[in-house]
Length: 547
Image (cartoon, rainbow, N blue to C red):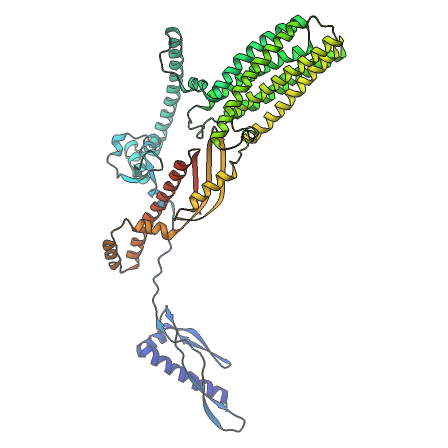
């Protein structure tokens, strides 16, 4: 009556028999009891096949036969090759998902110094705790001892009894530390007073020795010469009343003050880095040079322009200019000598850096000597301008030429100050080193077997020949793993592998060696950083980030 339903029933019996033969009688029986989960489609009907195992993969093909009713009324049995996966048992071990809550932070390591300072413990309290040797992040030590933070916290509670008592002790120690620093400051001041009274017998400090060579020596020579020039130029201005001589006196005064500021910046730049300034004080040279440029503009150029304009508006007759010419001649010789000292120092520094003199000056690699060079160049040109204008005034008797000389000296100082302000501002903003140097550092890293690629390279000039290098490094995990395996006992490792029978044992095995491989990766980073510093002494700070 219902040929389609009969055909479907026959197909169902055939497929169930085939499944029973493949899976076995027990599997089929177990499938009935576990429920109907797998879905199979046959013609226009959908059947649910029992799921024999929660992790069953169906691979083989099963041929199903159906009886098709044809128009002629004769039924013929033809094979229907539908692809139905067979049942093959494959068990997958799935680890439980870890809930990394606050208890996992108890496994963090803490150094002995932090344990004593933050938890108010003594060194004797730490002797009973578990000690762990770890790879040191510092260059001067290979390894150091750390403690589990959970052990330190438990010991602190044992010693102080409660968290409230620990907090009270921290507060008392903080107050005692503040009081100790105040006493230390007072004692240091008293020691300085005794040293001034009895005489200082300590060896020469680094801040003093830095003025005996290099840029410090150039600055000290310039201070002495410009101070004498300033004194004599002011005498000549008082005697003659020349506007050009006044501009020259102001010029020498501004140079002397600015070079004193440079000396202060040099002495500050060589101070040892402290926790507040971990990268040191080398930028103080750029800061002092920047302030020097502003001072030249305000004090030198401003006053020269003002005096020149007042001379044009209210010209005054001048006395004999003989003494003024003599002082200008002496100033020209002294300023020229200082200029030669600065040029020699810059040329020597440029050769050491492997760059040209012009490029070294334009990039302001040595800001203090650069200021001396520009100031003395402006001083020599200013003396020539002043002498020329004063000579024209002597010949023609017109004081306007002298006022024009004052304006010319002021304009020259304005140009020098603008250049100093621009170059030192660029340096303070964080200027990159030369592309050739960056390429050399990059090639050194890329030639290492453990490095696949280098990205996002940044090399910043910190001043005083110090460079900070940063890069994203794509490490080759296979090379790092081989580096770890070379230090292992393969027989012992094979034995550990053979003992792995359960997922828990496999997890413990992988965690053990995975942590050691991460430590090996950290050692590779340290090795590359040391190699960069060794081959490039100007690189002082290296930050390699693992990509």
